[in-house]
Image (cartoon, rainbow, N blue to C red; front, side, top):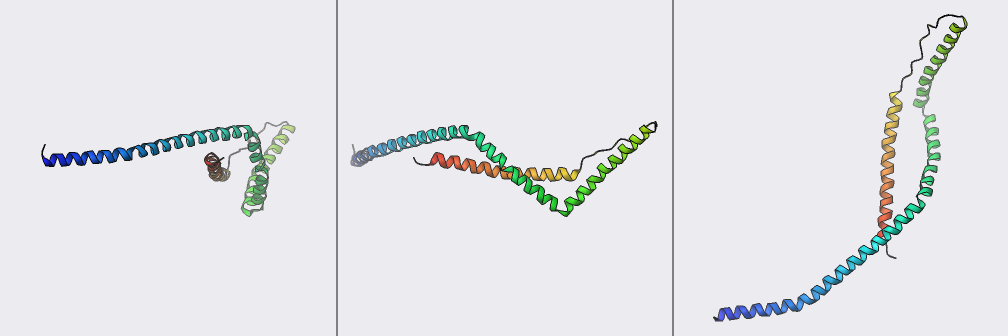
Length: 165
């Protein structure tokens, strides 16, 4: 062997020895890390099961509480809506449709009482786009609020699962 080869071989042997010396603690540290990760994963899985059991055990009461909380909000909405001038005008406009229906019914009864053939047309009912637009807009806003609530529930769950005992 030439001197260069011997020198390079000695260098390789020296570096191998150093690598083996360091690789032992590295392998130990990696094993500790893997064990800690597995332990944390098992702990989180157990906490997820605990959380899920609690959700199943309490969902009825929680759903009832959420439903009951809608009643004051519904009344507040109706009160606020009734106070709006545009709504009062809309109600008056819609009331004319009902008033017309009463006039038509009265005329039909009168013709019937007189023994006449009814010539009074039937009441024409049609929906209001205004109400559909309001309901559609309210539904969109309600979905946004519900999505925020869902995010809060998910955050609670994640925080519980990540929590330490």
